Length: 378
Ligand code: ADP
Image (cartoon, rainbow, N blue to C red; front, top):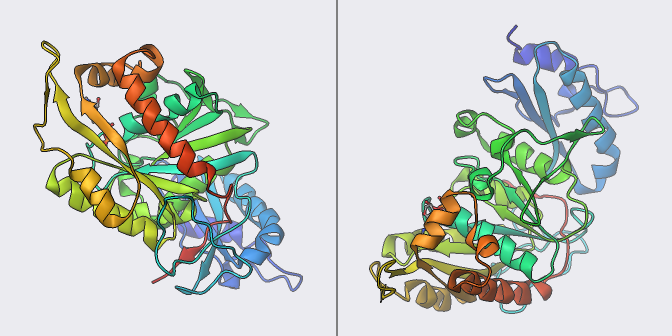
């Protein structure tokens, strides 16, 4: 039986938010309720950051009431807070990692966002197909090779590829009714939106749904203790990406770009987007920088070369390094045997490790953890 928005609102009207008995729908705090074709229900509850603790039981109750409706397959309910653009967060301290650039006058955030996880780092790109996921995966493995505890969260709603890159399949196990157990691959803890949803349903997601999904993948996955959680972001700089950048308590972002001019324009948009939401740019990586011939080993700069490095200088963000276009990277990625894990002594693994070393150096200067998401409505 198809579930309707009215059914959901009726269930939510049994949830009260204060001692006066004001119901959730009457409180003016409820977002639009979204129901996808798989009968997954999503909504958010607007709060002031100081009310987070008080509203967590309300969120859970609301989630439970909707989940109890027959026909509902799952519920994503999240708490969100809004504030006016440029309004300072009370008591927040500026946090700029060494060599990283945030937006001028950008509002700082603070707090311990995800207990046990020291840093959350977004790997993003201005457009698709530049090798963002391949880079995110190999970077995560290279950080892990340094002895760090690393997680990889695939939040690319438009084309989740971490399961393929790491050779993962099957649904994650649910522990104690609610928490998802991350999958393990090559020493990484991994979770992908591709393991949780049907591939076609993500394409139609809008802001609140994207935000609920990322919030839930951060909060309801048993990540345990991690030094770094790498988040493979959806490509591009549209609303969904902006929402995700805001909803994720990031220590910083890494932008992956190919050398072509067009990709660089897109990469610039990526830098601007993260600055807008006051997330420091930890660095730019040039992927497919040179083509290494699989026969003779000669390097050719078929897309031009050095563009990302110059662009990084111009934008005053760190340049983390260049990754060549090689058959080994393409084949290992597509076979679920990432090169850093399967050929750790090879030339590609060395490059990823060098980049990971610079990234970690920039990150170590960054304050750990971040505040609950703050949504800037412009
Ligand atoms: P994105 O996440 O930006 O859409 P992917 O990481 O899925 O891009 O990569 C797109 C394709 O390019 C994949 O087939 C991948 O194997 C390949 N690829 C990515 N980086 C490299 C590289 N440095 N050398 C060779 N192939 C690469």
